[in-house]
Image (cartoon, rainbow, N blue to C red; front, top):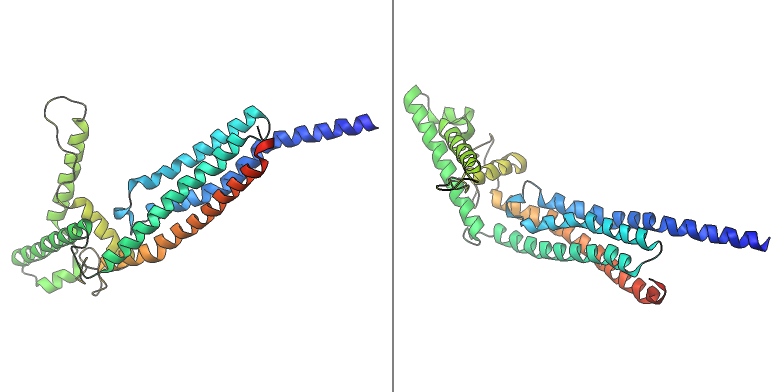
Amino acid sequence: GVRQGLIRKSSLRTDLMNLLPVMFTLVCSVLFFVPAAAILRVGRAPEVSYFMPQWVYVVLVVPAITCMAHLVHMHVKGPSKVAIGLGLGLPSAILLVCCVSLYFQADNLSRTLGSVDCGATREKKHLQRAWEAAQKMYVGCLEETSKRDGYDVATLKKHFRLQDCAEYEKALRAYREQATLAGADAGRSGWRVSAAPSGFVEDWAYLRRLEESESCAGWCARGDAIWTSGPGRDPCSVAVATAFDLFVKPHAGEVSAVMIVVLFSTAAVLTLTGPVLR
């Protein structure tokens, strides 16, 4: 009876050791995959994507780190200090640094974009020039159509938007052709076509998304809608500032708080159980 009891205990311990890698990986997945997805969602949000840094995509390494920790546990076949530190400590540190940086950047942008100073940042000033160029193209298109067809400009303005103008489509086509040529000649020696955006095409795409999704018009100051129909609305810079303040900052702050708790908990676990871990 005693021998059978010892065998059962040994079998149970073996089963638990076999389950440990899976359980640990599940815990890490819950702790880190959801916050990482939240950061990516924030970074890809249409209203703020223009200002988002590319380093937010560093969170994509978190699943790879979790897989590495799982493999270490499978190899050791038991609790591993390296696997716990790798699986819990490193992802939480990466997410914490990303979210703290994102929080302060969002705080700064919410203030500068919401201010009346159109030259507060280089990007804000550049987007104002892009909007002015789009408005100039739109007004010129309406006036030319009015002269050619005899319709009143005010009437044309009610029924046609910038994307209906041939000049706008020509600018988009030129940009696409330049990008195609740049890709075709990227591997050739000799002359190369620059892959840089021509004019304000990419900026216009962003401003158009803002008009459509945020119901704003103008950039630094309130202006007429160019891509959409409707009455005058708040300037789009204010809409973006609000998005940073009410969308980006709360998400970054919440993830930062969770990662701080995970980091301290990991340090406590490793300190208390370090002597018995391999």
